[in-house]
Length: 194
Image 1 (cartoon, rainbow, N blue to C red):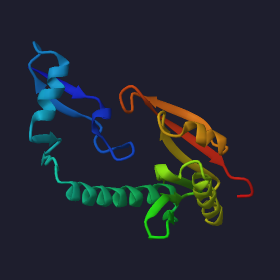
Image 2: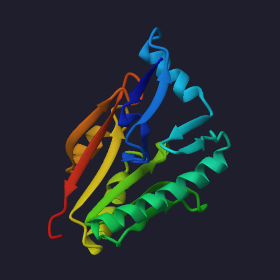
Image 3: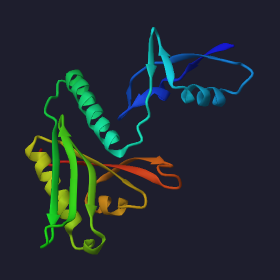
Image 4: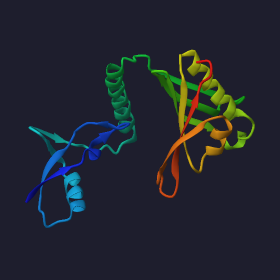
């Protein structure tokens, strides 16, 4: 048996915040390290220093959404204390048809001089009519009114990278294989007059 120190990237949660530096785990050296990870993560109980923790996977969508909101709040609290920026606010806007149905919308948040758009969507029947541009201009105007200096958004390679570039967003990075065979592209637009 040998002690395997699992790398810290195995313990990232939320948007890249490390919840544990490393864990030690007794492993039979005759087995391959990939098996060690699988064996380790297959266990229900993990020892973190002197503390033993039981990880309970959630499979109910409502419970997952509830936990997501809880974690987002805790991470925001940490980030606000760490940076001194306590100005985080949600941001959203929508377009509705005559029947009151949402046909286009965006949501995200502003925090620390940055506007991050989580979702931008236009119903397929209404694309190509300028609604996407109207959404991005609305988000930009609200970001500026909140002291924003940039808008950040991501789109998949099969979604709207051309549209983002047409709207003046600068491609900053791409994460290949997210999802398999595609990429997630990160865009930024620096705000004039902010």
